[in-house]
Length: 289
Image 1 (cartoon, one colour):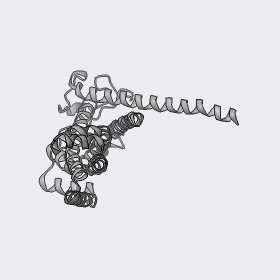
Image 2: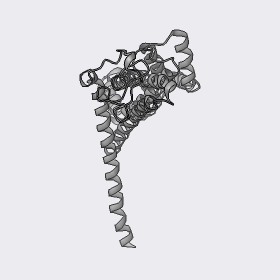
Image 3: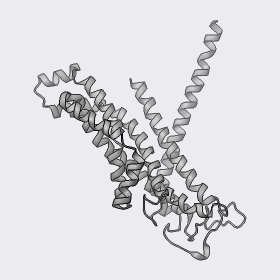
Image 4: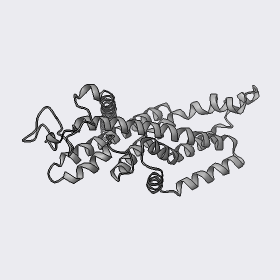
């Protein structure tokens, strides 16, 4: 029996080591993707907007007619796929970060106010959370964007105003548990205002969990933007977007499937790595707890 118990420890340690390596690899790939998106103009000699109809639908370098001049080939308008993919990563990262920050600001403010003050404030915020959860995100985003018009600013505002309920729920629960803590009571006895208590005592204890939620919402925002762009209601053409690249490439999917496969793989890896970053933050938070 003891040998069985003893043999379980190396297995668990190997599993934990593999999980850490997986999270580290995901973070490294995410950093490389974001860095490549930021440095895209310096890494690729082609402009993502420049059209060359004489060079349209060139195969990637591994194809029969591929060349190193266009490593990932060109699209139906002769634009370099690699340049557009790198720029699309930049757009997706910008949208994910902006939506996560906007949703975090809205949700954290409402959640902390509800948990700290309770009473009528809590009931009002709970009603807002319930109303938000009753709204299907993609349908509301489609309706608003189709009425207002597609643009990068509109997409960020719409998604930011829709992705805040997770922050509110977590902040509300944690703030309600902290409002009667001893260090909060000590601050009240010292004459601190509510704003000072929230800023100095409540919010620092929420940062770790809110960052984890931020990675989840950033990944969801990237996916939603790609979905809207695929339907023609996200980032407007000719601005490169991974979802828009997939939509444009589907017309030539039978003749050149790489036009759909390449942006799909980039989108998949980007979202996966953002989720891996959230798992890494969660692991760090659990160790601290």
